[in-house]
Length: 168
Image (tube, rainbow, N blue to C red; front, top):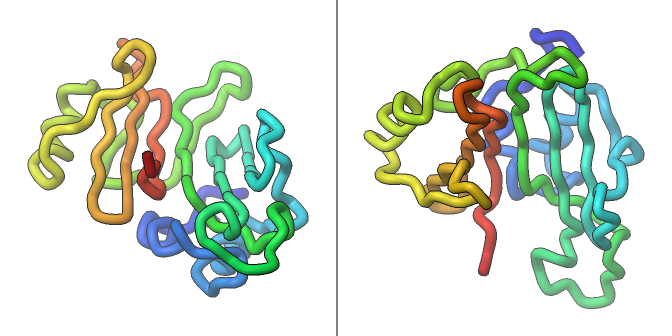
């Protein structure tokens, strides 16, 4: 996938929460050159979840079977359609010597410090919720969308994810 082939941030956002039959998600699939058959079982072998990842492009998409998210009569989990729940943009990855090079939300870049990210995003979304084992993740929720930033210490941002808020 070439940098020019990346969907825009707006296209990613409009596809989050949509299922694999929707025009929004079909546009994403078309731009990155995948089909439903390219979705892999989730790494932890969790029923009803799928994932697509291109390590060299620094992009990962996570999906859930629609039956996990909504009550659907006569629906077997793992038959789809698949709902896009998260888009993850990876910063520098030593294993692949690569990172995501497309546009990032809020004009962020992977070299930004936590303080500069908070300053930029908090003006619009307020203070973040702090998460992670070592409090290394900032998350903001705006309606039906969340943005989470995972920091890698002095290296800057490890990854940025856009997705559906996690229901408790």
